Image (cartoon, rainbow over all chains, first blue to last red; front, top):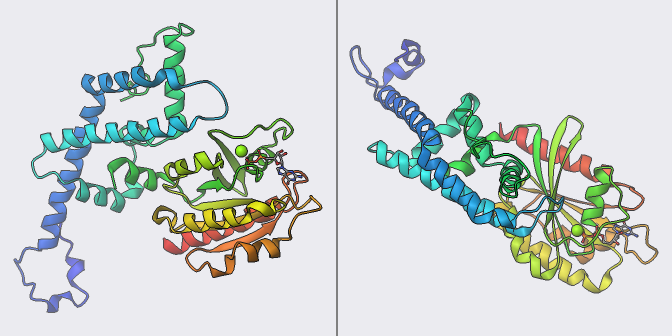
Length: 162
Length: 184
Ligand SMILES: Nc1nc2c(ncn2[C@@H]2O[C@H](COP(=O)(O)OP(=O)(O)O)[C@@H](O)[C@H]2O)c(=O)[nH]1
Ligand SMILES: [Mg+2]
């Protein structure tokens, strides 16, 4: 992890001698492991049947509010807020339970540092949780199934791509 | 800030902007929105909820949110503040009776922390009406020159004739993109 060039521009004056360990790199190495581990756990959450149950009971609770009209009701936005809170809490709780020393604040600041590398299916799915139009579509699909207009597709279309 | 809010902010790409359109009811917000979207503007009824459209313009993708402005709905505006790059405040320039109310609501919004980074475009709408105040008069009544916290601009326009709407949007895009680029 240490790159010798990092010391070549004046930093050698700062008491770093041969054999000394670079504390900065140790920390960032740990952080990077933690980061990857956290992503792995989020992947598990998305596949967890309990998570799908949670989504389903959320849909069950509110699908009646939704209508397939162009103008959105104000209540959709309140439901959307509640949804993102519930999803967020579920993921966070899972991370706290499965990783000792997990800290959401440092995790989100690492996300910010790595904002250009947030690719792959896990992030695709996480991004959809933040998208109101995806959320509305999910409810309209569920409603169509509930009203018997569409066959039941398993009702977890939005998580099956993991 | 929670995980999903952080991700939402990170996802927003350079060429994508979130625009929140507010103002008193009957100002012409929905008409402006439909006009941009090339839809019929003769059948618009008062907005009780909100509309969203996505516009492509000059290579930018604008997600424009139009939320109802009746007094009873204004307390819901706060649910739409997050991640706003640009605020469009629409004024009925002929509705002199309500300009003070309009001024009060606008200045309240500018105090909102979650709108702190947003660029402000004021549309002095309905310039086609004979009784409309000019955009300079609207600027003075709304006391825009006292605003030091936000980049702002006022444009006199008409949603019915379409005049000067694009001019306003172009300024908004320029200001937001200059801000976003200078951050990076
Ligand atoms: N003359 C004129 N009427 C307008 C203009 N823009 C909107 N209106 C009318 O004002 C009324 C309210 O418009 P609307 O878009 O529903 O306002 P909102 O409540 O702000 O969304 C409608 O009757 C529109 O036709 C304009 O530029 N000129
Ligand atoms: Mg409206």
